[in-house]
Length: 106
Image 1 (cartoon, helix red, strand yellow):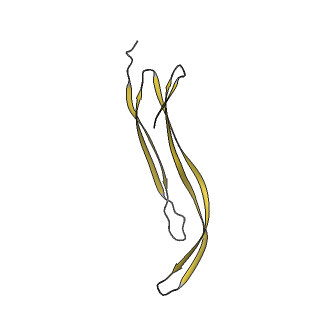
Image 2 (cartoon, helix red, strand yellow; image 1 turned 135 degrees about the vertical axis):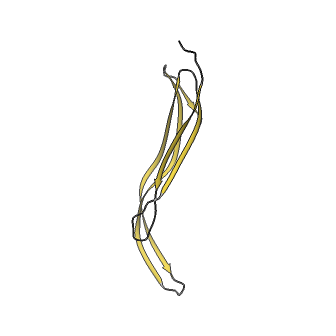
Image 3 (tube, helix red, strand yellow; image 1 turned 180 degrees about the vertical axis):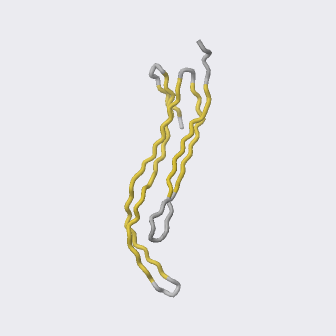
């Protein structure tokens, strides 16, 4: 039988999205998220980390009017299509073999 101990460590999470725009072309953008959580596992526990982000496809109609310094105007209409991500959430739990669960504040 081993000696029980308290384990210390970190949980790290990362994700990314990318985008870039140019007139008349399909483009992409990038956004990254990183999170680090210092955690302590008590004897007999394992740490379970869960991160989630909401994602959705978007179609947004637009009208763009450009005007030069000498007053010439050009109007363009179109639809912007893309994917948006929001509501990044993290959940940490310590679980024991006997089924006991301890929530860890993030």
